[in-house]
Length: 576
Image (tube, rainbow, N blue to C red; front, side, top):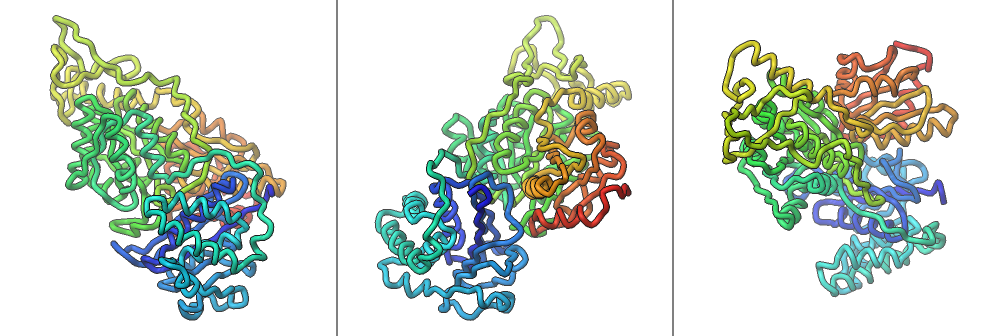
C-alpha cells in the first residue's frame, strides 16, 4: 500500500456537476482513510463554461498532482480541448465516457482502446431525480478502488443541505455506477483505521490563519481567485466580534484597513494581481505611517486581466518592488494549502509586532484547491509578543510616536488617548510625527523602518528545509509540492537532494540562506517566465556560484517529471 496512489480527472461543461463530483470523490477518499488533493480548472467566463476537477489520493500526504492521470471521466466533451494540456494521459489511462455525449474528441482518438463506455444519462434516468454525475461518481470510485460505503457516506455529507430525497437519489445513482465496473472495485488497499483529518482549501486556510493571528477587520473587493477568502471569513469573523466589509473597489479597501488598524484593530485585505496594483499607493502610506496591515495576494496569470482562473507565480516582483521610494515591508509566501494557516497566522503577528506591512503571496492553485491533511499545527511564535507595543501616557512629556528606539519599534497609540495624540499622515516626519523635509529626519526614519525588519530574528519559520544532500532545490509558493516530489525521486535514485522552501522572502534571511546552501548545487524553481525569485536572490548576492534557474510561466502547474528533466539536462559539475 505504501506506493499506491490514484489520480483521476473529471471534466464537463458548465452545470454538468464535474466539480461537485470531484468534491464527492475527494471526500470519499478521506472517509476511506486517505490523504488527497483536488485542484480545479475553469474557463474565464463569468458564468457557465467548461470545468474540470483533478484529484490525487493515497496513503501519505499529497503535495502535488502527478505526471499523468490514471482515470479520465468525461461527463461530456464540451470544450475538452481547453483542458488537454492540464490532463496528461498515458497508455495506462482509463477513460470513462458516455456514448450519449457524442464521439471522442480528436485529442483522445489515440486512447480509443482504453475507453469504457457507460450510459451515464440513461442509467440516471431510471432513478427518480437521478443525476448522471452521481452515476459517474460511482464508476470512478469503482475504478479507483474506493469502498462503496465511503462513497455513500461522502454523498450524505456533501449533499446534506439538499435534503433526504436528493441524498437518496444520489445513493441510488452511485450504486448503479459502481456496479458498472465491479472488477475494478474488488480489492481496495484502504487503511484499517480512518484517522481524523481536515478538508480545506487554501483560501479557507488563509482565512483561518488570519483569524488565529488576531485579524478582526477585513475590507476587500471581490476578485478571482481570492473571493472565497471573504466568503469564508464573513460569518466567522462576525462570531469573533469582528467585521468584514465589501468595499466599492481596491483603493477603498486598502484605505479602510489602514484606518481600522490605525484605530487599534488588526486588519487585512485579500486581492489578486490587478487589485494589488491599485493598492500600492495605500500600502506605501501604511509603510510610512508604520501602520500594521496584511495584504493577501492570491496570484493568477498576468499581466493585466491575464488569465483570472489559472495560476502563476508572477507577482513576486510587484510584491517586492511595487512601492515607490524606499519602502521596506514583509513579503511572505505560503508553501502549500495547510501552510496558508501557518503563514497568515505568522504574518499577522509579525505586522502587529513590527508595525509594518506584510504582502502574503498565495496563488490560484493553492487558493482554490482542496486538500485532505492532518490538522495544521499552530506555529511556535514564542519570539513574538502577543500584540502591539502600546504607548502609555507620560504627563508633561511630548509623545514621540516615531521614537528612534534600539529595535526600531516605537510605542503606538490609538486615536483619542489623552496625551498620546500625534500628526498622522504620509509625509516624512520627525520622531513626534511632525511633517519634516530635513535630510536628517528623512535618513533617521528611513533607517528606522528598514532596520527594524532586517535586524529582527525571524527564527526557524523563514523556510522549510527538507532532506539533505549536495543538490539543493530552492523554491517558493505552490511550486514547493512538485519540487518535494521531484526531490523524493532523486533521493530514491541515489542522488541526495534537499529542498529549501522560502516562506519569508523579504527581508531576506541572508545568513541562514547561505548556511543552508553552502557547498551545494542550487536550482531555483518557480512558475513564472523570467525567474523572478532567481534574479532577486542573485541581486541580493544570496546564491552560491553556479546556481541555476528553472522557470516557466503558467497556467499549467509544474510537474515533478519536468523538474527532473531540466536537472538531468545539465551535468552536475557544469557550473555556469
